Length: 206
Image (cartoon, rainbow, N blue to C red; front, side, top):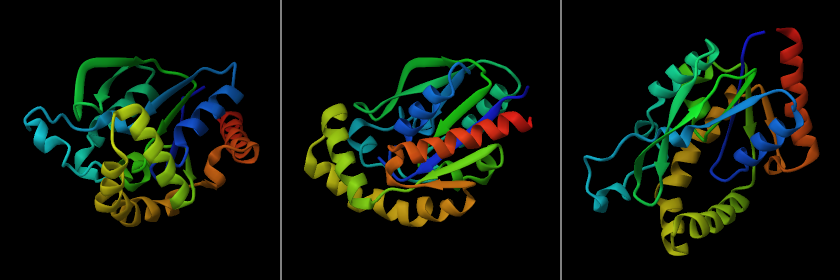
């Protein structure tokens, strides 16, 4: 039985990682591998630290989507891949990599996943997670302060400068590419159940 590639897209802090985790648990005992598009931020070693944090991390140019495309094809062929590990404290890739084995189901998530046609066409199921902008911003502030050592002021400044404009320009329009749109942050049983059932139907049909 072939590998099924499931993509989860949506705005920053919509709840994509949580949804992917909950769906994977519901699909047990099937093995599920997971990838985040954020891991594929391009190497910025050529830039001094003072310039790295000023990059637009919400545009397509900053993401090495070509590498992700190659990795998705490799997983589909049954090969293990080595995913880059991104360090948000230095705004660059670390020297580590994460080995991701092939699995019956591979879940990949990222805000711009459906905005790249070459990636979207590889996915067997495309799920867009829709969440209120105010909720997403509140979650982003909390996350970046807790996990990334940011200040509230810097998070809001980045949101206004790049996150919101890129969401309006790239993320929101990509929703039309989705096979399934779920709401309320993907944290309720109805949203999780819809995705699980869609994956199960795909498994049955292949």
